[in-house]
Image (cartoon, rainbow, N blue to C red; front, side, top):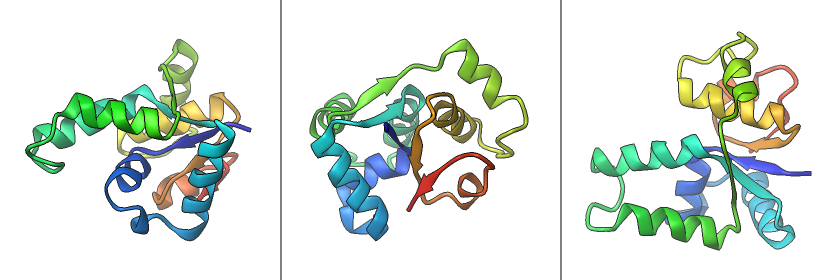
Length: 131
């Protein structure tokens, strides 16, 4: 079964894996071995925003940073499809952050588990989360 990584999971894995919960870290490690990890393409946009705001490695190259994460985690970057876009706006994911709604809708649409620390996402009915 595919596992989707929330944006903060990608950043934690790259910068400070100890920030991951025990189950989350185990899921990422196993997911890397099994080649089943993915992320929504909106996570790349969120990481670019973190760079633009100076919240990530100010002297690093943002593109290289993201490409390294994709390569090291063997991530499949999933696009926001029309079905995911509509699902994210259906009310099934009651979250104020549109990016988080898209990430959760991506996991739901792909019938995948989501690694996330976000308690609002952990409470979404039908969304299996790992932390």
